[in-house]
Image (tube, rainbow, N blue to C red; front, side):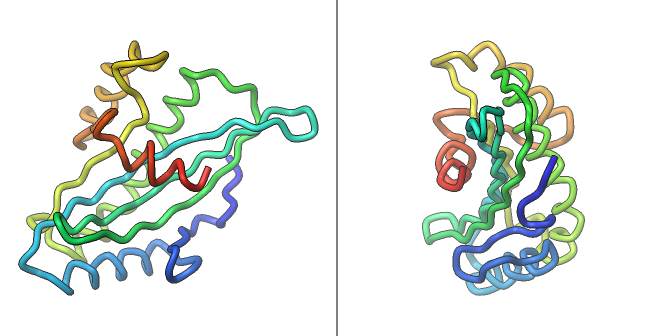
Length: 167
């Protein structure tokens, strides 16, 4: 998979940041209002395009720190893959990318912000309506099996709204 940001994330307000800089930014955001509780959301969405007659899929992963009731900050990263898109493969890949991001981010984040300050959710772009409804149990099981909480549509706004904005 080809990463367009060389493993870095993009902050709408700060530009390209490393994972360490993103963790520092998340930590500062939490420390600005330590009495509040937070939700850390990771979600991936994809968009298929035809470029010079070849199928290309953009996968966008969003990492959102949501101060419950009082705003949020987010970061995103885009990766391209050149292959023929199949819905099942796209959904599995989106889920696996989100899981990989969580596994990369969580150890550093736990050192910077106590886990008692936030809930971590993986948002998956599947729902009870439409062609992805048959996949819900499978991908939720993947996420839960890795020790994370999964959210699906209509609660998976991290994937279906924030990540989708950058596909």
